[in-house]
Amino acid sequence: MIEVELTKEEIEELSQKGLISKIQQIGDQRYLIKRLRTLDIEIASDYAIDTMNSLKSRYDEGHYTKKDGSYDIDALKMDFASIYRTTCTQRCPHCFNQEDDFYIQKIIKGQKLMKWSETLALLKQAKRFGLESVKFLGIGEIFSNAQLFNILDDIRNEGLIIAIFTKGTALGDDETAKNCNYKGIETAEDLVERISQYHNVSILLGANSFVPDFQDTMVGCGKDGGVKDYTYKRNRALKLLIKHKFNDPQYGKRLALIAAPVTPKVSDETVEMYEWAIKRNMPVVTIPTMVSGKGSGELEWLLGQFEYDETLIKRYDPQKVLTREQRYTQWLIDFYSDIYVKALQLGIYDMDTLNNEGLSGYAGAAKCQQSHNGMYIRLPGSVQECPGRCIGAEIIEDLREQSLLATWIGSINHDRTVNCRALCSVKMKDLTNSNVHVCDCCRVYDNVGSMPLELEQKVLENLNTMLYCNFKTVGGY
Image (cartoon, rainbow, N blue to C red; front, side, top):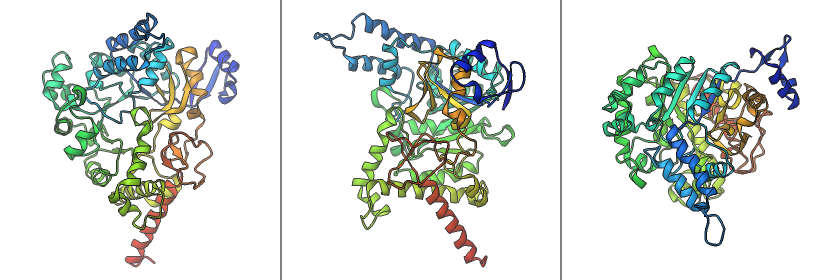
């Protein structure tokens, strides 16, 4: 909680919206408010935003009107996508924040995408309510934004911690780094070295796989002008980040590997990657499924793998008696179990803690803080529970229609408890008709969710059984 002096206007707004009872008054205009600790935010260069916003004028002027008077929305989406591609070096087929439908809908409604100055003003507001950190999620590749260092300077001046999601191409490829047009940056190492001078910046580096055939496919290598030889460049980025001490314990945990999404083809490798990286002070954030952006259809694709791939069926259902949903669930149970065995062996967790506090959606890593400590602010001003889910997780359509304070206090994230037992509070789905009760502060979505309700229960059963067997083997019982 944080003690805040509210303005009369803020008190009136909260009262009108029926939210004033959710905070504790301790003085005339002083209240105790649950901290808004973190914000995930979308950013893009002002130039890209101006170009995207200009699509509204073209739409109004009839540029996308067909001969029969109807609108050619597909052409509008294609134009938006062409602009989006200029902000990114990859063409990831599962990209969680390239949502042509979402942005086009907002643009047509006249909801302008926000420039950095507007976003910065929101962050300054959020500091009053306890903001400590921000995460940059794009759109596109952050290191293609010509304003990046001005933005980093602004954030550092506000005393905030920054986490940057990146696929790392510019951090490992000299030509890409030079093309970013940052003053004084000629090579990838120049760029890494300059970023290293911002001690409040951590890098969340994409790492689905170290096998080029798998990894290059997962970023759309060479597609529509996208980066080529990506895995080599990403690996060089990792080496340079390590060289410049991003994983040095003296400076904390400033480098993490993001395995998002994890697919059946790479899940065994992800378990080994987890152990390798943890031993080098690099947490691994594992996200088996994405249900946002271009990943909204990923669950159906995965279920299809467990319906037709004979190798997967033989491994997870040799008797062929399970549904595809049950096979998929068994894969996740095995994957989470394998990761947590590594975590127990490495001393990151003990079984008492796991039994009492539950597992994390980020297998083997810290629990997600977004679900009860933050929100996700998107370029059109829309606010959602988190980046991991877009459909069905909206908090407000446009933040410019009400204060950040009212948006936070009125959100489900504000109401969610710190001891939430959900592996992922926005991805739960009863895939196998298990009807398992997860927690009281979350709801089960019925449209795009991908996290089986019984997953935590089954993984804990596995871990406790394995622990019992180990003790019994060495004479513990």
